[in-house]
Amino acid sequence: MSTERPFSLRGVALAAFLPTMLFSIGEGAMIPLIPLVADGLGASLAFAGFIAAMVMVGELIGDIPSGAVVSRFGERNSMIGASVLAILAVLVCIIAPNPIVLAVGIFLIGLATAVFALARHAFMTSYVPVAYRARALSTLGGVFRAGWFVGPFLAAGVIHLTGGTTAVFWIFIVCCLAAALVLLLLPDPSSTFASAQSGAGADKPVRTAGEDLAAAETAGLFATIWQYRGVLLRLGTGAGLVGAMRATRTVMLPLWAVSIGINEPDTALIIGIAGGIDFALFYASGQIMDRFGRMWTAIPSMIGLSLGLIALAFTHDLPANAQWFIAVAMFLSLANGIGSGLLMTLGADLAPQTGPAPFLGAWRFTADFGSAAAPLAVAGITALVSLSVASGTLGVVGLVGAGLLWRYIPRYAPRHPRLTPTNPTSPRRR
Image (cartoon, rainbow, N blue to C red; front, side, top):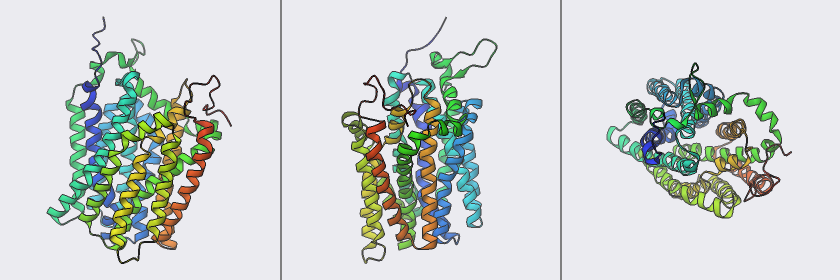
C-alpha cells in the first residue's frame, strides 16, 4: 500500500530552492569579477573577455552530456557532483599562475553549471506535480536572480576586508560546500513523494520523471535540432540572440569597469544593485506575458538591451564615464528583468504536447549557443578594434534579434497557442 504524503511546495522548498540559491550566490559573487582577476594576471582586455566567455562556452558544451549524467546518477547526486566539480574548478582559478590556467578553471565552472542547471530542472519535474510546477519554476528563476543580487554585495564586502579580488572565489567554494551539504543532509525526496517516481519494474532500477526528462532532452540532440530546423532557424535564432544579449551584458559590464578604471569593490557594488533591479522584475515579466502575450516582454527587453549597449559605446571617453556606466548598467538590468522567463516560456509554447523533452533540449542548446558566441564576439572585436565598437556592434545585432522576434513570435507562438484546433506553434511547421 502506498504511503504517499500530500504534496506541499513548502515541503520541497529547502531541497529545491536552497541549493540553487547558494550556488547562484557563489556564481553572482565570482563571475562578474572574472575580467578583473584576469586583468590582475596580466591578460589584455580582449583576452579577459575571452576568459569570461569560457563560462558560457562550458555551459554550451556541458549541455551535451548533462542529460546522460543526470539520468545515470539522479538529480540530487548530479547536483552534488556539480558542486564538487565547481569547487575543484574554483581551486584551479585560485592557484592559476597565468590567464590560460584561469580560463581552464572558468571553463570547468561552466561545465558544472550546465549539469547543476539541468539537474535542478529535472528535480522540479520529479517532485513537483504539474499543478504546482509553473509557480515552482517561476520561483526557481527568482531564486537564481536573487543569488546574483546577493553575491556581488558579498564580493564587495570580502574585497573591502581582504583587499584582494581572488578572495571572492572562496565565497563560491563555501556556497558550493553548503549546497552539497544541504542536499546530503535533507531527506531524500524520493522517499517523501512516492508518486513522483515512475516505476520500471520489480527487477529494474526506478527512474524518476526528471531523470527520464534529462535523458530525453539530450539524447540525439543534433538529430533533434535537424528535425526542428525550421522553427529553430527562424524563432530559434531570435532566442539565440536573446541569450547573446544577456551574455553580452554579463561580460560587458565588468570589462567596461576594467577599461575605465573602476575598482573592484565599486564594480561589485554596481553590479549587485543592478542585479536587484533584475531580480525585482522576474514576477512582473511573467504576469505581462500571461496577460498580454510574449511579444510584450520580448520586444521591449531586446530593444532595451540593444539601445543600452549602443549608448554605452559612446560613453567610454566622456569625462563622466563612470556615471554613464552606472546609468547604463541599471538600464540594462531593467531591460533584462522585463524579459525574465521569456526563453523558458517560448520553449514551453513551441514544444509538441506529446514528448516535448527532445525539442526543449534543442531549444535550450540553441539559446545557449547564442550565449556562448556573443562573449567570444566581444573578445574578438575588442582585440581587432576596441571595446566600444564591440558594445555598439552587439547592440545592433540585438536589434536584428528584436526584428526576428517581432516577425516570428506571432507565427509560431501566438498569445493563446493551445486554444486553436490547428496549433500554429508546432515546431514541425516550416
